[in-house]
Length: 496
Image (cartoon, rainbow, N blue to C red; front, side, top):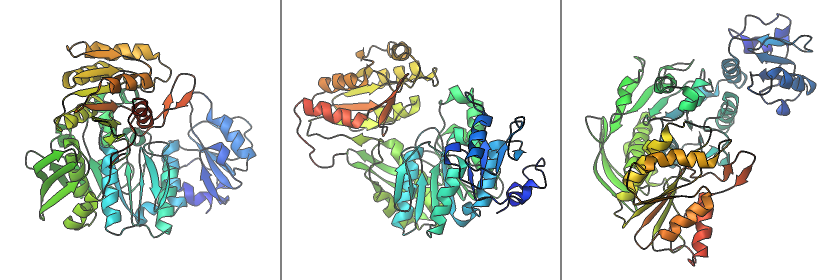
């Protein structure tokens, strides 16, 4: 494909002679550039994109696309565009033959529940015999090939490559988490979505977005088309007041789900317990029974959202229900750790006030003797939520251990102190232990028969990010090791 075809309607600044250049590939990482590639140079907070552009040319790049000014005496064509990441997304779609049009795309956005909802939708589609791909916080999967996730929503070029690989393999559906960062940074610009799901909206990521209004505006873009056509269907949480503010295009079918009110997909007759959830969904086609091994009321919402999305994607309601029943535990989401101990240990990714509240309430619904909660907050992230999360944990738990999450460049003790401001608004017994492994040991040492220990914040993550290094750390493995130290010998069925 030549550069002219890729740049059509994108850059008025491209020299006519440059447009005849043949392009063999696209890349935004100079280390992966090959001869004949076009390199995309983005503004950087630490290093100029021009520095990497020179590296890319040395590796054989035939041109550079950037919103930056061309450096003096640059040795290759430099194509100016108004927005570098929009150009990357549009040119990626063109280069790979618009795989978003060859697949049905389902995007899930919201503060909490995105990962579980994506897993549930993917499970339904695969159980119905479709060949799927998915991407999110935990992993990327194309057909049967899995890889570790780098970002909740990858760069547009990476997403398009996944979609193209899936389409060429006979794939039908691609389901993925669409984060507010991805929407703000144009990682899905120009994509054609079949179905867009809104899970909920609570405070998070204000370090990036600044205000709740800007955070919501980023989410909103998925429903009106972020540079592409609006989705065919929008699935909205009727029990979240922010859903009323979601604007959809006239041609988009607007479906609501929830537990209360007049949602079009309404969960009824709900039974939650240690072995999962069971409920009925009343929907436009009738009434369908849902049974799932996933625990907690929050998963009633996630499963109902997934069910509605499945129906919008053409699944028969009974086939959708069978696919939800086949969706096993999602890594790091109410994931049980069982070494034969007489109390329940759960690891969960909950790292916002609302997610932590939902997690503890899900534990309470199991009627434990006590709930012991271990959690921290990430460094270099929204500081306003720290005391609020502390108060939430203290209000709903019987004992709280405040510890580190990923402190990054911040002093872990300062983060802990920010959390303790909220914890101390309640009379709940608590301790502070910045060392996360020691905190887990402290909590498990306090647990007795019939208790539930919640280890929140990191979920599926397998490392901890410190100021000067990243170290291996997995809450699940740490809990297993401590339980083994305490003399518990092995799982008693159903272990995670």
